[in-house]
Amino acid sequence: MTVLATETRALFMLFGATGDLAKRKLYPSIFNLYKKNYIDQKHFALIGTGRRKWSDQDLRDVILESVKDSAESEDQANEFASHFYYMSHDVTNPEHYRALSDYADKLEAKYETEGNRIFYISMAPNFFGTVAENLKSQNVLSDNGGFNRLIIEKPFGRDYKTAEELNNSLGKSFNEDQVYRIDHYLGKEMVQNIQALRFGNPIMESVWNNKYIKNIQVTLSEKLGVEERAGYYDNSGALRDMVQNHIMQIVTILAMEEPVAFKDTDIRNEKIRALRSLRIYDKDEARENFVRGQYGAKGEQRDYRHEDDVPTDSNTETYVAGKLMFDNQRWAGTPFYVRTGKMLADKFTRIDVVFKKPLIDVFDAGDKDKSGLDSDVLTLFVDPVQKVILHLNGKVPGQGFTTKGIDLTHVQSDEDRKNTPEPYERLIHDAIKGDATSFASWQEVGRAWKLADVVRNLWDTEKPDFPNYTPGSMGPKDADDLLARDGNKWVFTLD
Ligand code: NAD
Image 1 (cartoon, rainbow, N blue to C red):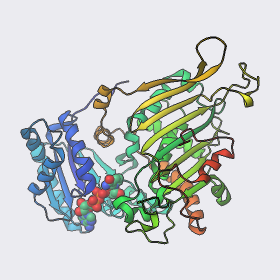
Image 2 (image 1 turned 120 degrees about the vertical axis):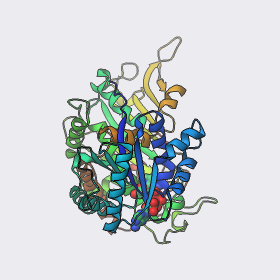
Image 3 (image 1 turned 90 degrees about the vertical axis):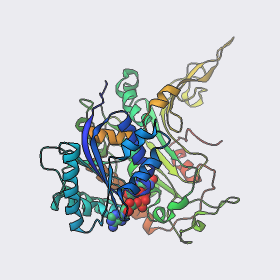
Image 4 (image 1 turned 135 degrees about the vertical axis):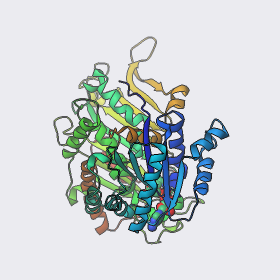
């Protein structure tokens, strides 16, 4: 299937235009789309807003700086930057929205953007609702037949209740199909590849169930600690920061049924259906099925509680491992193990699909428990290298008959890597096209919070035994025990 590029005319409004995300990710991504003509090069403009008293030129200088390495010429960079305008804006002041609306009308006429408006809120989440409500009440939304779309960043709430309040607040101005909730993991090539591998290959899909799969493991491992984000992170923790969103999205794509057609509404329906089968634990089950950790000290590395801006009595988890179960025909009995943490051995994201061994090992004792056969494992390496390895059993060459593990490996070529867009570039392009496939819907987000809330509520009432893992390890021993209880082990270990 090929989805063709579309040149779309649009006026963007970016709230948080002076921020870190805008500079590092959004401007370079919009520039790449511009270069590829995925944004109509003549008929687009962006109004950036922020608290600072900047001029258009201040914003354009930032744009030029953030695209300087990828521009083909100075003229190209200048021409791109000339489409950017700045307005100093206080998100809580309705008058500022009226000024914004007038300015948008003016630019819309100048650039002939046909009433298509994309609002991107790249600000702290407590502002999302205020901005969205004012956009409608102060008539900033376009009403001449063009589209209005809203792109928002994570975090989407801190728990189910706040996420629902936020959603209700957005719902006053935007319909669900106009809201694009960014989860940048959904823009990663190998995460998108899951569906191609599953639904494009009968040999995969026919074994993609509890009859053949013993367990599935998803690991999002970070090598760094909290760095300068400690203030934010200590209020969030790994469960909210990584599990509720990125990990739950990946797991859902692994677990979902085949959509009727490969389009956003059908894919969303299947994701939601899978999440309805996700077992939401009670408190005791949550204690049994989730492990938390906080890193200690090692050599020069301070323990988490002595990082800058972290309280010395902080019980925030920097590591989570969990076991998820889907109570449906496809997955009953097959656990999905997930883990994520900071200060681990390395930075990588991988998915390991562990297949069951044959019921009888004909080569050895005839007994699968004493078998010398390896488990077949399909590993999808999401980051930093994109590759797929299928680990199978083969024969040791030569006389006699013994088996050994062999790997069928596909590594993304340099050419493919060059052509792979950054997640933000891909996702902004999707939003411009109106394709919501790789964005999280409210029902998905809500269901993921239901699970995370049970674990959070449990952890908030019980004192952890922190610190409990060493920097450079793969987390606390309890995370290994979680799998060992089921007769399983992590495919990636440091042993
Ligand atoms: P930032 O603090 O660098 O920027 C915040 C922006 O909001 C600034 O432009 C500031 O002027 C504006 N702002 C703040 N208060 C305002 C007010 N009262 N009125 C008008 N403007 C106001 O934040 P960031 O790191 O760019 O993050 C933006 C969003 O993206 C957040 O939701 C964050 O969680 C999310 N996010 C950021 C990253 C990242 O790498 N930086 C990664 C993932 C998600």
